[in-house]
Image (cartoon, rainbow over all chains, first blue to last red; front, top):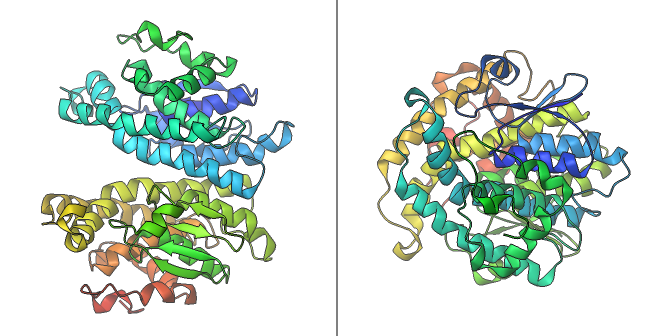
Length: 230
Length: 230
């Protein structure tokens, strides 16, 4: 069986987990702490980047960009399901544009500061970068969520899902990023009704269940995290 | 004719220019200042992200991730040339892993701080973010180049080009990022002989000429920038 090396609250790993679930592909999950990768993982992947997908034949594919396109090329075309990227080059470009928006912009402005300060600082040893969180960075991240929720709302004025009328990997990417912040109870859903409705729809999919069952020891999620009626 | 909206010292735009040249595709170049996008460009692309590729039929493709995969899908397969991503899913995964390394890690650690502080602060008006450069950020960026040159050297111990034995989009990405820093005379090439040899090889390709001819008004490059024997 294939293995996905991941961290439960890594948004990039989460996108791949959602993609695998949508395609009904089972992979073993191997947990890795991003701030303290173990030796066998570093042998596999010296950069320490997550996620890493190790295929049945032992090929190790590193990083969300490579893993997602590798799975599209090697698996998606074979299972008869519609591609989560879209049907035409222009549709796929729109999906990839939005994936990049969340992977680059949302992560830089929101995810990275909040997750680094609230999770990594707390669980990492001092020599691994642990310590008191920089609350200025956290506050900046929290403030930066709002325009992203507004963007989601604006897209949904014209579309059923973020990149078009069908669910796509853009929805998986956005939901993966937001769900990490939601695990901390930090998404102000009341600010955007359309974004909340969209998240409720994607959260209700059976493919989301494994993410809702995640539980970081010493840091349980708020009740709303796994509640489909949040 | 297709149009590429770009900024000469934007590393993401540069990768697409190199890709188009390798595939002998001519596109009109439309200059845009990243810190002061003009109204018609913002109408085309409200996020202001560069590059944007406008195809013959008017389709506007936004962002380096979407543009590069769009061109692979819609153009590369039709011109009879070998794909610059690689031949198999595993080869393409290695190319995409390295592209992401330079687009995410190199840009975060080196390109973004140096280019923001040395170019944007200088040419932007105060209300656009102009002003005195933060020299601490510049120095951190300069220091961070060294491990990236070492990585290039390590890859070339086993390979002819960065992702394998053939030139790939990973070389174009790495060269695109480094060439922006080289325009400022800030790459310590003497630190890594293999990285310098690799850059001399890619710089000597006819496809690189348009980049070497770039000239930002008020900020000419050092003589070594366009010199093939630097």
